[in-house]
Image (cartoon, rainbow, N blue to C red; front, side, top):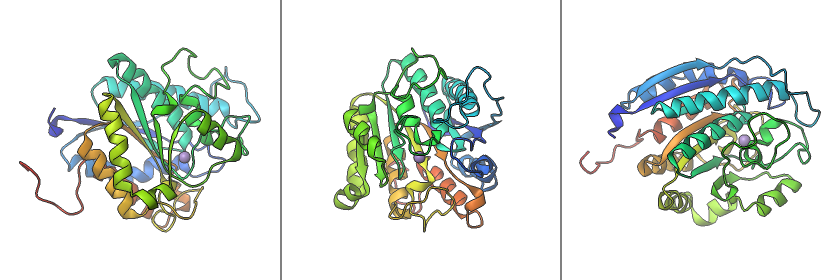
Length: 311
Ligand SMILES: [Mn+2]
């Protein structure tokens, strides 16, 4: 399919209850103000903005101390799963405008359901300072934004949020890049479940380009779909300060753009989360603009226009 015919579907997720602090609910508005729709439109995509999801808290999900705001996060998860699946089924590339990282419980589960209808495996590229592989029993904070990976892999079934027989993601098809803060129990779970982790040391030693090319080769060889989940804290705090969970030593502006360009070149990306932007903590919209630039890069924008084959 020609790029010009492709549709991207923007799905706003004003969810902050998974993060333990206020601010992420303003994320979708910040992305729109930073011009995400026009940035993608200028690249030749049809942009369909599906607005913001606003579900009522789920009455059937009892509150849990170790999974804070479960009725709210659970309701969002169901709505996000359905909307992501519907957008993908319509032929669009869903882009989730978060919202804290608990939204990926829904987006990745929706894409897993979509991939299952195609009989293709779903791979996940998790660009984050954290592994987000906690469960209520292991989480030091009880904030659900630290649990989405365990959830969509079926390793954190702490509440009947989605059907237990839903398509799951094989943790061996999860690739985490940029990791530099993992809780003790979480470290054990990641190893046990054989999640692929490329921490900042691996990036320093091996280089971002080489790591990405290996990951993309795995996805291509398996005929997989690739969901990309980009947490603002993947980036160094000097690059993007607008996030509540900054960890020093993150990816540089250039490393992040290289990833996005390689992802675009691969043609494998089926869906994207932009998460954890907290406009309340941002420096005059800087982080929102950088996230929009990275999304544009992933969808084909070049910082330097190289001559392209047949271009
Ligand atoms: Mn995260």
